[in-house]
Every structure is written in structure tokens, then in C-alpha cells.
Length: 419
Image (tube, rainbow, N blue to C red; front, side, top):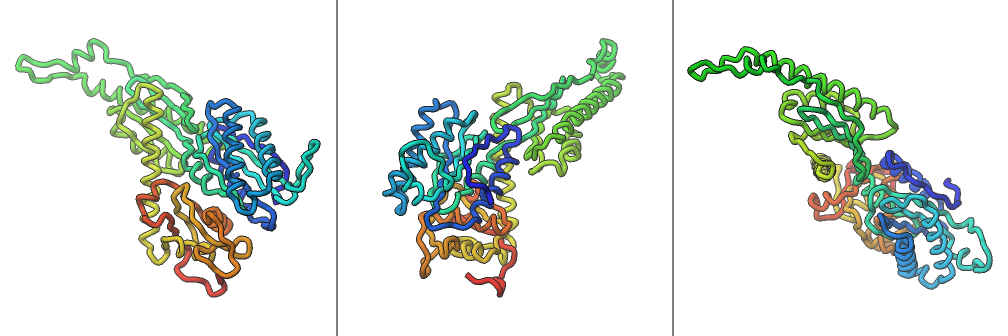
């Protein structure tokens, strides 16, 4: 059980994915705690970037008050609105690094806060709070309900680039890292290949009177160049291996190479990165000269690569049609029966639903169930609690018209489970 005490978390820039994943686990654990009648949660993702603090606080206050006032059970609790808003503003003001944005999670007993005295400085033990600075800009989103909405975190995890970028050019190799949107050069390694001597050059390009090539130095020069190129690859591999010693989960690698490295770059990259990345390395026969171009090109290629990987995984799961369901009713039923191994959902999707016994999700009305404005956070919670995975990506929109789909662990409802 997570202690109900306010605290802040600044995610390290070089381990954003790991810590976001840890945050999902932590908040899932908190969601599993008992849901009291008067206990509510706020999940808020807000952009910050280079905005002045006053602007950020104004936006934050507006979003929180709008969220609270739109909730039928909380709209009239003005004192609670004041306490929660003041606490949120204080958390953001004290955050040392706002980076591109932040995620704010608040859990509170609405009745206790409404009855609290406005006089003097008070601590509210019923108010749990956590704030996390995000290195990638989030889409502004607020959810007020009984549990935290974790669906956006999966979108953030997918969007966060943690990549190794290699540039193989004739004169040198450059090793870069991409963490979020921060592109840094780690090492530049010169190619030890020496240009041909005048004698070798003449020998390599000599022609007879009939214009027939008679060069004798061609093989010597080519062998030396190949030897130097392979030595450069070996040196680059040594530097890349040092990166694998960090406590990071490197998601991607992009290798840009000139044509001279074409015959052996594929095997080199496959051997080096096999089993060490979340996705297969991306090989690009192209030389890029500026950092801005490199950043833009890399981001686009990684986005296309990951979208293609999601599409491939989706279609592979879909092939096993007896273990694949689509649509809100069938997916919600499978989630409630704890049969979902992998949930596919479009980010930012909202759907009306019903909750029975404080937490059991239904897509349709059922006796004694309470209507909720957005069933998605409950579905994500149930999938995570059952050990499943969540894929939240815009690419899913092109794969199914149903907005939601799932791969199931088995194709039948176990006899010991009931809805």
C-alpha cells in the first residue's frame, strides 16, 4: 500500500522509460486499494515547456476546477475545490524541473476536505499526491473519478525515444544518443584509412594507349580501405557496448551509413544490437550533415518503425481469431473475466460505461451498477491488475474501426469465473 503523503518525483532524463514503467506499477498498486465512497482521484497531464510559471499555474487551476465542477458528486463542494487546487499549485510551484510537462496524481477524501477549516496551515492525511516531471511533452488531459487514469502513461512510454544513433561516413564514425528530444554526441571516431599515395593513385588509374584500364594498385588500395572501414566498425562497437552498461532500456538504434559500408553494415548491426533493444535496428543508407536534420529524420523513422511494429503485432494477434476480440462489449467482457493478455486502444478515447461493486466494469447497464463518464481507466486498470499489457497508439485507428481490441489468453470463459 502506498503511503498517503504528498511527494514529488522528477524523472531522470536518461531513464524516462524505466521510471514511467515503474510509475505505472506504483499507481496500479494504489488503484487496487479499497475504493471508499468519498474517495476520488484526479489524473492530470499538462504541458509546460518554456511557459512562465504563472501561465502554467493559471492553466492548471482552470483544468482542475473544470474537472471537479463537471463531476456530479463533486460540483458543489467549493471548500474541497479550494484545498485540492491550492495543493496542486503548491506541488507544481515547488517542482524544480518542469521539463516539457508534468503528470499530477491526487487522491483525496472529498467529505473530509470539504469539512476542513480554511484557517491556519493544515496537513491533510487524506490527500495523496504525486507529481512527475515529463521529458516528452504530454497531451493536456484531465480525468476525475475513483481511480487514476493510466492510459496516457502508455502513450508517453511509447512516445519517449531512448535511442542509439550511429553515423558511418567515409572519414569518421559518430556515436549519438537520443533521450526524449535531446540529441547528444557521445564520440567521434576518425577513420584510419589513408588516401592513396601518388604512386598508388597513378597505378590504380593507369590506362594504355587504347583507353584500357591497366591499373595494378586497385586491389591494394581497396583492401586497405576495407580493412580501415572494418576497424572503424570495431571501434564504434566498443563505444556502443559501453552504453549498454548503463541502467537504461534502449528502445531503438538507427544506423546511417555511406555506401562504402553497405556490404557489411547489416551483419554488423544485427550482431551488435540483437537482444539488446526493444525493436529491431533501423538501417539507413544516407549521410546527414546537421544535428537538426538528424533529430527530425531519426524521430520520423522511429515513429514509422514503431507504428509498423504495432501493426505487425496487431495483425499477428488478430490471425488467432478465436483469441481476439473487438468492440466495447466483447473487450469489456473479456477484461472483466481476466482473459485479456494485450489490450489495444486509441489514446484519448472516452466511453460511457458502468461500474458494479465499486470496480467491476460493464459496457452496458446492469442492476445496481453506477454510470461513469469514462470506462477506459477502469479497463486499463483491470488489464494491468491481471498481468496484461496495454498498447495505446494512434496507429490502432487504422487497424480497427472499433476503437478497442484485445488478444485473449484463451477463447472460452472459465467455469470458475462469473461476471
